[in-house]
Image (cartoon, rainbow, N blue to C red; front, side, top):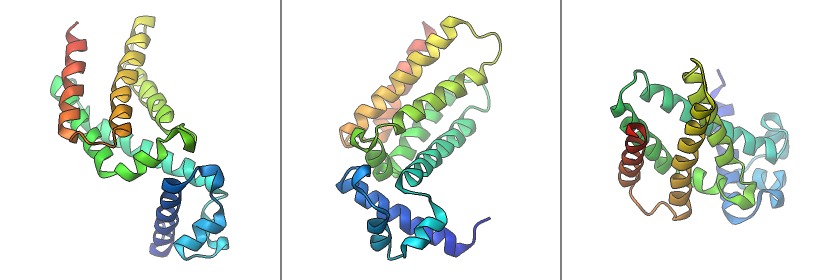
Amino acid sequence: MEDRRAVKTKRAIRKAFLELLEQKNINRISVVEISKLADLGRGTFYLHYKDVYELMEHLENELIDNLGELYCASFHCDHTMNILKFTETLTQYMESNRKVFLVLARTDNGGRTMEKIKHFFHQKLLSDNSNVITELDVAEVLFSVAGVFGVLEAWLKDDMTTPYQSVSEMLHHVLIKLETC
């Protein structure tokens, strides 16, 4: 477990990095800028991260880990209400971490975050259904993940103006419709 100072320092670095990412592309952000904005020395930054790209990857992985935990908490048994629970939890999490999603999902910041998240869910859904997996199963998972995250990306690009509950209900409705086909 990290000590409180390290946690506080990392929080300051992340906050500064996200503020800079709102203003410019990742390839234009320097460790000096992050350190200055976080009121830390450059050496302190390097104690925690190799460079800005490792920091970006760490933030992406943290998001994916959190989304994975939300998924596992929602799907402890096979029931259609779990889909609603998950879509509500997912959209609420995205809304409460709005700034992080909006900044990391921008294509001029590499645009890899949403692709990594989609890949994670694609793998997760296939591994959860580890019986015999057919090509049709793979296609259904690809379709579902692409569809759900297509809606979520549109929501992000629309600056999340629609309430998360409405987005959740739309996703739930579509997924239930697909399940009954």
